[in-house]
Every structure is written in C-alpha cells, then in structure tokens.
Image (cartoon, rainbow, N blue to C red; front, side, top):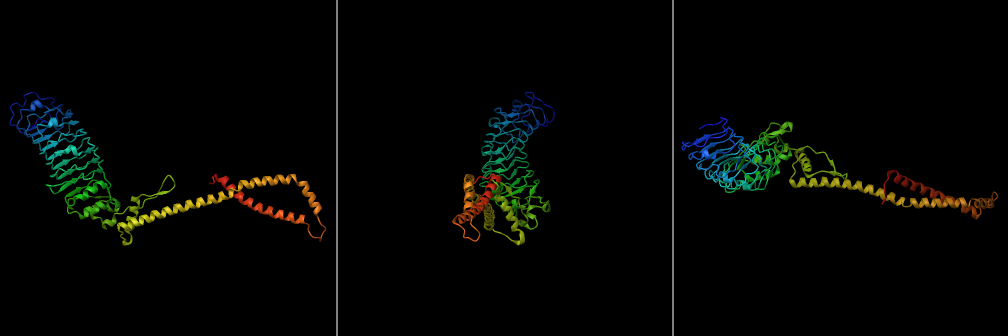
Length: 434
C-alpha cells in the first residue's frame, strides 16, 4: 500500500485493522511526528515499512515502537530528523530485520541499538553526525554484508576491530567522508572470512594523499580487497609509492581505481599505469625553513623526498639503507657547517676578550703617567739643560736613559692603538665579552 506524499500528520486508530495480510506499507514523505505504533500493530504480515522523509520524527526511542511487527524485514527511516535510536524501540523487529536505513538524520551515536540484529545484512547510516565508528556500536551484526557510511561529514575515525566480527562483509562505502583520516590498528581487518573479498568505496573523500594508517590496514588484506579512490585529487608523487606498490601487486587491478590529478604530466592517468612506474613518483626539493634559533630545520619527509628525486637521476636506484645513510650524511654536513660558524664567532669573541681585559688597565696606566708628567715638568727641563754636552763629546748616562724612555713610550703607543681597536669594536657592536 502506497500512502506516500499525502501530507499526513497522523493516522487514525484502526485505520489498518483489517489489513493483517498486508506485506508492504509506504508512509514516506508525509508529516508524521512519531512512529504510529498503535496503528501499525495489526499488520502482523508486514515485511517492508517505509517511513522516510517524515521530517517531524526526531526520535525512535519509545519502547516497543514496532510492537507486533515481528515479521518485518526491511525498515526505512532515512531523511527524517532522528537524533536518538534505542534498543528498546527496535526490540520487536531485531530478530528478523535484514535491512535498516537510517541515512540522512542527526544521529550522534548508535549506542546498543543494533546489538540484537544478528540477521541484519544491510546497514545504511551515512549523512549523520557520527564522529567515530565504534566497535561497541556494531557488535552483534555478524551477518552484515553491506555497510554504508557515505557522506558522514563528521566521521574522522574508525576504531580498532570494527570489522572483526563482520565475516560476510563484502561492501564498505565511505564515499564523501571528507574528514576520515584515522584508521586504528586492525580497524579494517577481519578473521574467519565467509566472504573472501571486500570492495571499499572511497570516492570523493578529498584526499590528495592516502593516510599511512589506511595503508597499514590495506597492506594486511592481501588480495582480498579492492578500492575505489575515484573523485579524489591525488598528487602522484613520492608520497603515493606505497599505494602504487600495493596496486601493482594486487590481483584485483580491474576493480581498483586511483587516478592522478597532479603533476600536470600525469594528470588523468591511472596511478598504476604512470609511465616509468615508481620512478616517476618524485617529490620536488623542499626549501629550507629557518628555526627560531637561527638553524636550518629539515624534517625526515623532506629528506626522503630529496633522496627520491636523486634516485631517479641517471638510472641510480638506492636501497633503503643507502638512502638513510645519505640522509644522515646530509644532516651531519649541515650540523658541521653550523658548528663551524659558531666556533668562528666564539673564537673572535674570546680573542677580543683577552685583549680587552687589558683595555681598562691600559687606560688606568695612561692616566697615571699623564699625572706624573704634569707634576715633574720643571725638573725634567732642568735636567735636560744640565745634561747637555758640547758637540763631539760622549753622551752622559742621563741622555741614554731619556732615549730608552722614548722607545718604551713608542711600544706602549702601539699596544694602546691595538687595544683601542678592540675596545672601539666592543663599544660599537655592544657585545659583551665572557
């Protein structure tokens, strides 16, 4: 029976009293504000119920909300305004339900609502407010084969062991989960598989590179998984080498989709088909950034990018150990250069410091000498007059002493000039000498 799009706000009690053999009822796109529990109870043979598009329904929390519908197989509650779903509300339909569609609501958590749905094969919970897919929320869904989380804009994490019990899962849809980047260890791993293959739809996730946490999980699958990364603007450089190797070695290559968006020469090409293979996936040499203490700061990823570029030149192929050795040499050279500059500056300061230590002493000595010269000026003149000798005669001892004083004075002037240079340098630069 199709009663969709009739602007229904409520259903009269007894409206379905004589329809015990009805198998399908469509009440979608009306204005119902709650699940019409009493009106639905007589429909013991109902297998499909459509309540999608009733934007006034905000909760599925009343106990036994689907009382009497034990034969229900397919329940559609998508495009409502549901915030909360409880186990008590679904208790009557949990045992036999095969399809549950909760897409396009405002659900933040599923709690234990699914804990008794041991026969559920298809679950659609995309376009909600889920921030993480938790193991506890999907426990008990061993028969699940299709899990649709598409367009979950707030979803950023998939917890460990989420798929552990989903032995029959064959399709996982993450299309449009633009914030999803964290895959916990073993989050996508399964044990005792009843279905050997799993197709993961990851289109439109706005990825330019594939997170390492996802690659760690992907590499554990072996040949049992295929991925569709279409619609992502992938930058095909050295960061995608792990994905390239996985795609190259995968036996499901016809089902895998990963297309390059950049660089320009690879745009539009399938990653696994790029000319030159892995050697074409290179990163541009990064520019050095200056840290707060004035030293060059280069991280390991930048070094690996540079080495990846070098390894593609002239047919040179480096092993991982050779690459790490070359990285170490580059870093060591940079450190040695920095230490040399620091040593030169330190030596300059110490040298000037040794000279300037005498700078103050020299200034004090000069002041004392000047004072002595002023007080003894008359006596010196008298000595010079008394010591003068006629031409041709030998100089007196007083004359020799005067010459010696002149030589010492010249030496002192030279030292003072050198010290003045250091003192002037220290004064002009404002440097403190240790």
